[in-house]
Length: 193
Image (tube, rainbow, N blue to C red; front, side, top):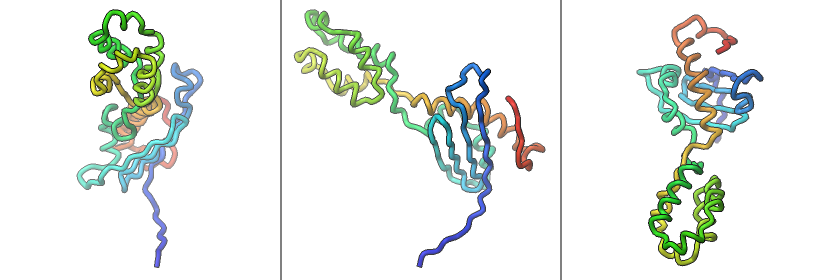
């Protein structure tokens, strides 16, 4: 028979709110960081999206201390995947590749504004399929799909990067502050940073 248990979690909740006077006002108006200190789980609800990751608990280091050591790249790798196309770098690499393999008469027919626009797509599949539709047929036949794929530069989605910036700029300093201080046992503390 199934059982149901009540678990009383040891969760620290940090709430972030932007002020209208912030230079980046509107990039992420609010975020809540739920830090489960026993299960080593971080859950983030925000107007930039929802993110979560669970680390393996360890007795050698508290979860607060572990989180306070994170660098932006490591943090991003846990909460998101590099699925967003970096349009400027992708366009630069595609143009360079096509310049290497295109004949002069083909090169002159290429509409670089269309290709630049295609590189603004957010998915790898959208970029490759749209390129196939606009490039001259003979040129497309000579394109090595692996080489074309290598021209696509991906990065983390902007929303995940914004949350990572908030985590690094606001959450980590607070975690370092509360780790061994008088704030550790307060139920509600407002710190303006």
